[in-house]
Image 1 (cartoon, rainbow, N blue to C red):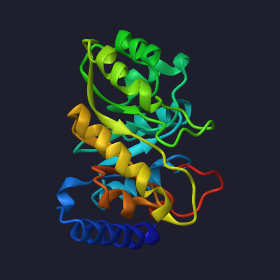
Image 2 (cartoon, rainbow, N blue to C red):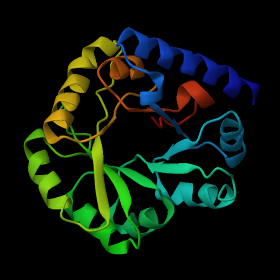
Image 3 (tube, helix red, strand yellow):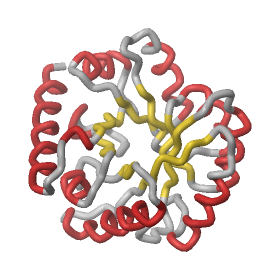
Length: 225
């Protein structure tokens, strides 16, 4: 597992450099280690190196790992970051600490109905309007915030987006900038944007959460972040 330690040092350094370039403190940025397809042993290694936030894309895969690692202290904060099917709402409400991928009012209502506690959530926005990605359209987000904001168990903390895949991170800078402007307009706190290939640009544009898997755990057979 030595590669995880080496990778984490590199990523931490790059986060600090991106924050320095943009006049921000690295304390403003939460690193979520994307652990899809990663086993509990590797997650525990990353935990022992200081990571406390882990992101999963699929409820079915993640529940066993969450149960195995439930005794770690301080407790791991589990982020649901993938598209969430409505029939998995109950499990997601039970196992996760924060859901970053609320992409419909219907899903928000279902999750709210399964909760017995307050849960922070982020609303996923399809900033680039890609047909293959989930999320609220730009023209829908203000009404969605208004409607979801009425639910008694959900606390809207911010916005999340997945930028288009590109070989040049500068090409997606406008996507990140647009989400930041939208977040500011809505007077929300969190901005979850930026992954392995573009997180530095995302930080420069105001990301408070970056979701990084491959650059920490290594290449995997299935893209997960």
